[in-house]
Length: 438
Image 1 (tube, rainbow, N blue to C red):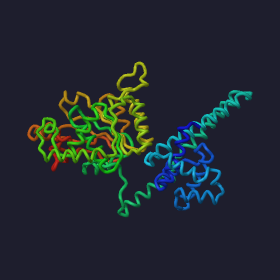
Image 2: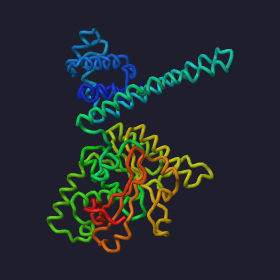
Image 3: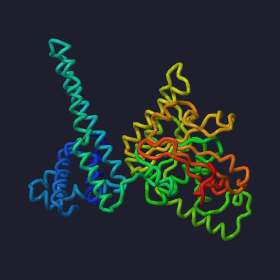
Image 4: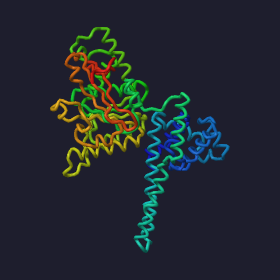
């Protein structure tokens, strides 16, 4: 075992000892890591002891685990209390426990694969018939998959479903996805659930502002948000967040017209935003790099929402000769959809609408999604943002525009239009007091 993996195994134990109520259930129940996933026998003994103690509702810390191991006759085998203290020292921060645990899991998988390959190599040297040997190979690797992928049974899923419905009937909190800042949209889609969500519009029609509002709202409510910005810099994204939070016009700030009280509001907004659980990535443009970054954030910090602005800008390393834009975007969406379910989070992907909407001066439809029919097919929810041209003739000003936020597709519920005001100088959307003429 290399030094890095050794430190990771010790760090996981240190995190379990420091914050057992959070780290142990994550390791044992969510990641389904058995003690055998740790490569060193003394670490396996310690982890199993911690698991057993938690199952018995015992207090877990360095002293109690030392005492438990001593009574089991295992304390000296693991290096004594001194080794437990070393594990605590090896943990830079328990906040990174998920990252260390994922390192242990990945190391365990690789070791199991190496072992199976060695076993196959040995059998190959003595086998009389290659076809018989070949038949047994899939089963050997299937055993590894069974060890590391623990799927819920139909009974488990149905039991959870009924418990949710029973809780709702009793007046408890209804299960829903991540909320948005707008009550009417939340009612219509019941929040943003795990899966792929498409947010589409023509340039300068507010789709990026909608994404920013949803991301900031969730980060302000303690959700962990990752944002891939392919069309803006970090500075541009954060400037929009600041003026939204402060309620101060960006042109006023940019041209030096803001008053002292407004500058104070901006300073307070900056203090709030700088500590939010929100991570920006305007560097990675290639699909696999984006996925790797999202997995890293999930492992290190946790991740509740990922947004990508926008899909037509994502680069694909696997592009095959002769692929057109439709085929590339189809591939991107399939990978992102799989990532959403892997990480169990919603991924909001922004998309442009085709120019046909403006050319023909009509309301956009699903076929106007630019680049691929997969944008419609793969998404659980498709939301369009566009200006109400008729209302704009009499009601649009420099400060606000009448807009529709139109849920065009909703896999599990309602669709429909929601009237809103777009405040471009403040990068925000507000619900309209009354519906526009449809």
